[in-house]
Image (cartoon, rainbow, N blue to C red; front, side, top):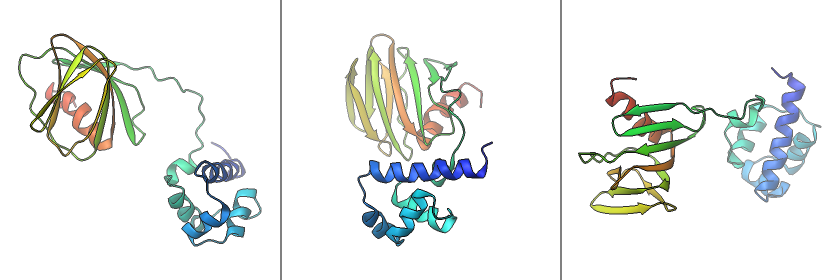
Length: 193
């Protein structure tokens, strides 16, 4: 665990870097936070103690979660070693850690003998077809997505995906609601949790 001064330095660097990445001047950030430009400058340079009453408005204005701002875990193990989880006509490899706000998976679909029922859930889904073809049922629409193409859609529209005329592999990215709906649904349907 890092000591307090190391955490403070990391947070200061992140605040300054995020402000620059968003193209905000001290005055512009001050207007978004109701803090003075000099207060923000002193926080970034280490001339002012960091406190929650300063961090909360800064994190909100910089569009970052407080958890992310304060996270000082090392990047010692950046490699993810996916393990597969098969359920019926689907094989899933988790490509991201479950602690993030989005989830990435590799999905292999085998042609199904039955049409998958369309489901709805809060959130947003995105997928890229690596190989094969995928049929995306999106409400009343049927869309074929070829290898090298991607699809993105709001998930309050009833939807399902299936391989067309052979196996298909895709990369999917979805938020936490999508993870519960897609990843856990497959585990639940096979009797696992």
